[in-house]
Amino acid sequence: MSVKKKNISASHTMELPRQIVVGEKNIDHVGEFLKSLSKPKKVSIISGKNVKKIIGERIDNSLKKSRIVGIWHPAVSNQVNELNNTEKKVRKDNSDLIIGLGGGRSVDVAKMCSFNLKIPFVSIPTSASHDGIASPFVSIRGKKPHSLVATAPLGVFVDVDIIKRAPRKLTASGCGDLMAKITAVKDWELSRDKTGEYYGRYSADLAAMSAKILVENASDFSKNGLDVRVVVEALISAGVASCIAGSSRPCSGAEHLFSHAVDHLEYGIGLHGEKCGIGSIMIAKLQGQDWRKIIRTLKNVGAPTTAKEIGLKPKVLTKALTIAQSLRPERYTILKEVRMTESMALKLAKSTKVL
Image (cartoon, rainbow, N blue to C red):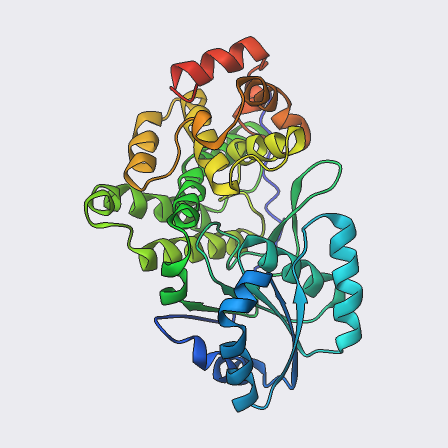
């Protein structure tokens, strides 16, 4: 394949959060944060029922002190139809801000509503299960599960104490999403070399560093428990890397396509970060990287490294590897360089001890 010449006149937009606050036991100050950010009078809050039940009253009290009216909406699903329904309801609020309060689904729904309604969005995560906390990208469930560009948050507000109370499994999933940066950056480099695609060295290094800090601290985490603040800040850093790149390239490669493919074949298996972590083990081997290092790190942080641990059947896994690239054919990854068959996929999964 001939290498295309780089288009030196090509440009991209960097949309970055204006303010990011990471603290402990600071949820009662969220109203002050919003007021300092954009002085809103009314906000639409998209959240899950459990999150609202646990901290809803504290959020309402904080908003009231800052003279902000909050209107709550449930984050039912990130399916296209449900997103449209939520968007219609939020439109009627005539709010100044949209808040995504909760896990990945709540943040994604809020992010999409923000983009379509052209209303600023604030991310308030209650778990560290994914890197979408600070990124402009959102996962959508349609005929083909995929990620698309929405809008970066105007601000990010994190109460580490609340995230610490989330199930450990969620933070371990976030670690899986961090390890995916190792293979995502390699795929981006590959595309640069094979197609001449723009490659942002700074954003690539920033994403890689998010994974590196986890690798370097995983052994300590294994002995003393996960340092939630480190994981949260690494996930925010990865999201900012995507903002700088103007695309999801530094954070999403073949391992993410594998995760989307599993969702396409049998939705509901494992968490997003868990599938990305397992996918990164196999993709790293295809890329000639140290896949054993990824396994060691994931095990040390309590994240799954095998299909069995997340209930992923061998047939679904092998099929997912064969169709992954077809979900996004325009994105060059290592899967473009192998004609993946189900027998090859089975061999790869067994050789990396995923099966």
